[in-house]
Length: 282
Image 1: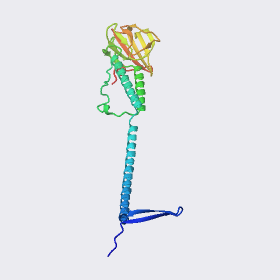
Image 2: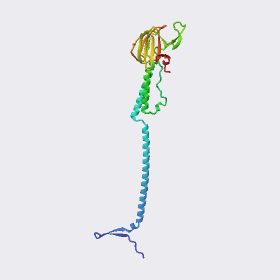
Image 3: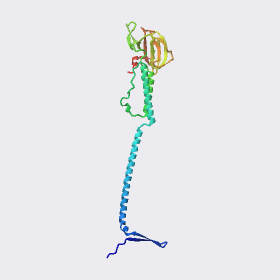
Image 4: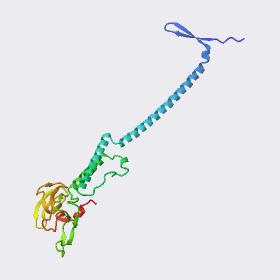
């Protein structure tokens, strides 16, 4: 006959310093199952360690992806002009367009066929990425120099465009028996028609001689001079500052002339050159 298994186990704890003891009763079943408890704890611990490892790896990958994304964003931000730069670039473009419009209007007033500004950049212009502000600054300076040079260069018609005699050798207009060199071009018109300067400059002569009759000579920049002869009246005097398109006299037939017309010369460094080359910007 077998003896019954104990249902409880008693654990006695002795305190040698105090000489006392204490007993704890634990169901025997728990002691028998202790190995299973340890196994369960070990499994749970292993699962937790594995989960933490996976989570740590995932967080690391996310941080790496985040850093990569931030780097790409930073690169894109560097490619986008700052608000101030964009505003400055836009201001430069607007100033350039204003200068082009001013040049166009200036040429039209002087009888020169000007250029069209609409769509000058082509169909891709609207999608063009902004270049650095320095580019616009250089372009703006170039346009300023272009306009400055233009206003001091003889351009356009000084009178109504009724050209009657060209530059170069021609038959003598008085008897036609000989040839002579014609140092300018002639515009036919009526006495009193307004004569206009073709560039900014300064009057260096305003008076009369036997050949040109009453005439005005204007000195411009870069060695250019223009002469307006056979006037009936000069409206400017020596030393006057002249603006392009300014009325400087009236058409007449003074001097060596066969009828009312303007004799117009363009000179470069004192030598007559063909004014026809300056009537248009072709």
